[in-house]
Image (cartoon, chains in turn orange, red):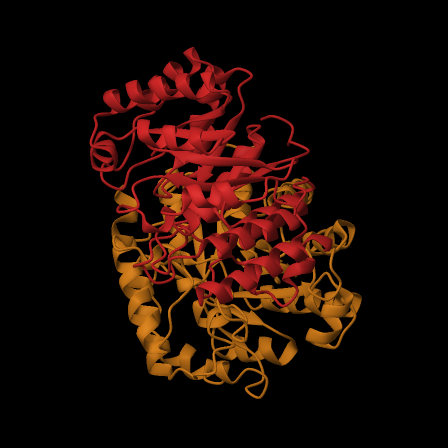
Length: 305
Length: 305
């Protein structure tokens, strides 16, 4: 066990993972407004979009427009998710400073998600990472389904380690382990992180967690003790499957920040403003978000208790 | 850190904490049916009722009838919550084998909840525990608001320890720490349990946790590592304030059992049956329960992944 980090970076994914399956397509204006409100709330890292076929993900169709029109604050890191060669070219045209490039550790998911075997997808990812680095981008190299797969069940750690070790040869700026289907448990979190840390050396490790089975913050607590200090979170806990009533999505920015503040870890987040941003965004999407602290009468003051 | 326990006991509180603030008053028949379904689902410890004024908690008005009519399975421990002298007498008349007797660690909450100072409430509790033990009952001696108070905020650990040390002088069968308002965080959990374990010696420690701020299972994960192996849980995660939309109640039996099974800890719970019981009870109460795994398409098979 490491000492707990003094500071944690929250990588805000509401504009990408959070809304990508929402049927209501947001206007670029609404996205720009949300992004500014997030920055005012203290968020310092934002995943702005993926570059993906508008036919597959209509919510991301305005990616270029968004990157063109948005304000780029100096103290905020803006990121995009890359899905293939054309996607990276589009990101380059938009002068995206930070990209995420992921490979699935599950053969079935890899074929369904990218129509490639894991080996093929990894070969392409390594090529794309090289190109992105050459273009001066910062790169997070990620493993999807690192803790389990909705199709295959358990995902052997050896497969995850093979991908991580390949990534390390080309020196990404960050490694990201994604619990794509929310299947990680904290005991497994400890085991996987212990292995990945050995391979990662000084390279920071980030986690992309879903709260599908209510284990998101239990996994965060374990990961903090393993020294992880970058977590993907979504405003409101959005990002769940829209067809499951009450389904939890990504771990909620509000709940994660609240836990970290209670533990004594800084995030830079202003809870009052963040809760206000989230409540206003609930009105835009016309639904209650799953974040737990959001609906408490004193949600905004959760960090002063 | 202790080795993780091989087995955990879930103390099911849906019939008491879970439904006590529900406006729909269940019939004794419905409660009896739920209790049988819980036993069929593998639940081995059930808090059947409190003995409290029917005026204050109308849902508990049939406590005597329930204790009289229910089937007492040999391998199930049935418990009641005691609130004062008259309450204990009623429990004795019902031949209740296991009782919980609690004192709040917060002066404000103690006065509001029992119209007594903490010192007065503790004096009465010690007297009641003595009487219960003389009557042959098993006793869990508990501290409410052990991790924080909705009225007072932080609750100093010294006050909690004073109560625990007093309890230990009269040798209760179990100590219970209650996070009454769901304010505990896992770092604090570690600190408080480290202290309480020193005082408790061989006496088992149980936890009564609420998921108000989404931290319930993070606290369970920490507590498991501190050797705790008895947790109060409520079917569906019921027990939240009925006036807060989406508020989470007690930690959900489904979610806790699922996490424990994934970690490799036995509970005796049959997830398929438990999920069936919970879904049927959702129909009785005509609402969606907050438990996370309950609404997954494969909820029942969560323990086979």
